[in-house]
Length: 292
Image (cartoon, rainbow, N blue to C red):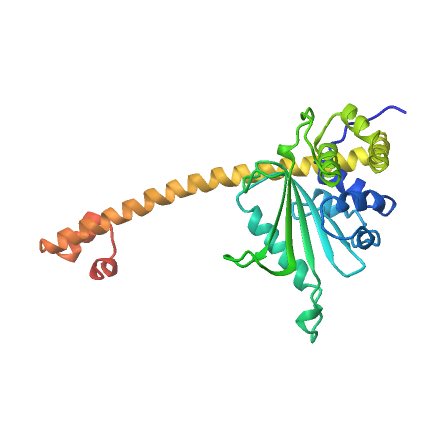
């Protein structure tokens, strides 16, 4: 059967369709094992918390397609792919982590019932916090570097640091596996995915899911609707920025003109001119002039 379109896993719908469905839990487990310092047996019992694809999430400007799961020790993990880094992303990911952390505490329960929460952010372009491929942030004591708690854990995976023609580098097995997964997610090349799939049964399974998706009219429609949403979102931000600049300039001119009127009125008042004359010259109201 002929392919109808080509998928990039940097599209969050495609990412969730590959990693966030029940039949591919073992694929997700394989990815998580090379990101987190958690025993594989804990990850093996993962439970997906949102397996449905809601129409509003795909085409609505408020929709977020993330992969959310829990482990058998009640740890909650949220994975999100972000094509482009922006200046508010750090605050955004802390906000979503805090929401995830607190929403599970029932009324009357003690704080010790709060679960450990981990957010994993896979970033396509523009990540500028550091030069690492994989960075992990916690709350630590500034001088001793002691971790206050392991309940806050935020990961960033920087796809821009992954190169498809990377020279041979000595990685341990876990880092090499993570690097290959990130290359698999980053690439748009079927050839590269096929090559990686030959080395890993889980990547082969993920690759098979992509191949099936690319032959489905329904998947094409859902994927392209999500792509349209992403383009629209970029346009909204650009238009909003341009409008903000224009409004800022206009407000600046208006504020400057008003300030000039106040300065002129103040000078005329010092020279002894009447309020009526100052009103005529500056256009200010009597009340505004009396306040000077």
